[in-house]
Structures are given as C-alpha cells and as structure tokens.
Image (cartoon, rainbow, N blue to C red; front, side, top):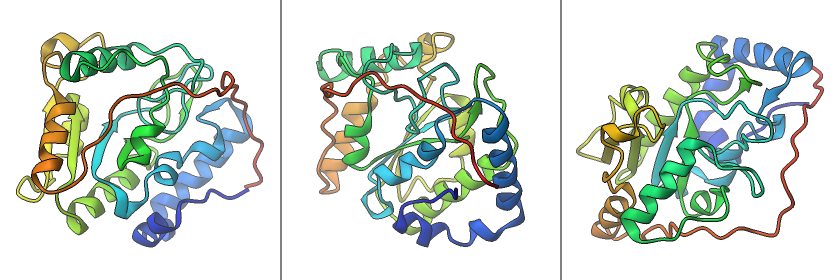
Amino acid sequence: MKLSIEQSWHEVLKNEFSKEYYLDLMSFVGAEYQTKMIYPSFDKIFAAFDATKFNDVKVVILGQDPYHGPNQANGLSFSVNDGIKFPPSLQNIYKELQDDLGIPIPTSGDLSKWAEQGVLMLNATLTVEASKAGSHQKKGWEIFTDAVIQKLAEEKEGIVFILWGSYAQKKGAKIDREKHFVIESAHPSPLSVYRGFWGSKPFSKTNEFLESIGKQKIDWQLIASNNATYIQSSIKLDF
C-alpha cells in the first residue's frame, strides 16, 4: 500500500517525494505502522491535503503533533471525529470561538467543515505512536511541512496563517508578512491558554482580513453529522 496525496498538492510538492529525507521518512513510517499502533490511521495521514486543495487554501491553522489517544486523530490538526470527547485544546478553541463570534459550543469535534472552506488544518508532524507524544518528531515530517508552508507563502498571496504557541510561530517565522496575514498568540493548551490565547479573537480577525481582500469569509459554525462514533484501527502495510 502506497501513501498518496491529493493531485494539486502532488504537483506542488513533487520534488519533495524523491528527496532522501522523504524516502527515509517513508521507510520509518512504513515500519512503524507494521509493528505499532500509530495515529492517525494510514489512510488519514494526508487527510488535511485531501480536504483542502492547494488553490483553495485561504487559512492555515498549524498544529504540532496528531492526538496520540485512542480514536482521536483524524488527520486534521486539532480535529476529532463525531462521537469523540473533545481534547482540552479543542475545548479551549471552542470557548474562544464562542467568545469571539458568539457561536454556541459545537457538539462535534470534526473540523472538516472548516477544511472544506479553505482552512488547511496542518500538523507539523503527521504521525505519532499511541500514547507517546512527539514520538515521530525529527524523523523528516518537519522538513516536509516546512516545504508545504514555503510553497503556500511563495506561490500564493493573502493567506491567513494562525500560529498558536511558540512552536508554530518558529515554524512560520519566514512567512512574508507583506504578502500574508499572520495571527500569533499563545497555544490553546491548558498549560498556556491564559498567556494570551483568551481574547485573541483569531476567528473574527481572519474573517475581517478575508473580507478586506475580497475573499469569502469562513463560516466557523459547526454542526455534528450523523456519523457513528469513529473507530480507528492499524493497517498492515507492504513496504
């Protein structure tokens, strides 16, 4: 089984796929999925790219790792499927959403509606071992997602980059602020949320900017689908 990515992203990133770091990364990832419980499920590794085509990107919300608890990670940063308890960071995102725009706390943790409107929900590291936060860091994913950010920053204009926390801010340090709108604040994690995340109003600021350049604003309101509780399993791969 091979890892595939949406066609527009494949065209933009095709040079990455033959580089030594990426080939080494795929060897590592393949071995991990064969022998351990890895999140998200293999078919969801590139879910963020499948959900938001390159030319449709209007906003980037940058996370760090996928969730490492059972059934949580679904390939979109900060997102979980319907029926899954909201992780603390997502709870705090929803509280800020309510305070910022008056939107009721959603009943669904699935952020795919945002992705469908042009919000790229990107993690810096796209895989993680169960119960081991950061376990797939420094294996090559960061180089790949740096290339994603660079392509967006260089080839497009007027993207909103939402950078929560010092990690995301360092990763986005080279973004041209003259071409793009960058929103920076503390991370929504319970450990840092009181350091400037509350009251940062990223959702209204994003929409104000998009409207100012003639783009359609994001409808941030979320409604749960009728999907059953998401059950995740490992996939055995032939690498």
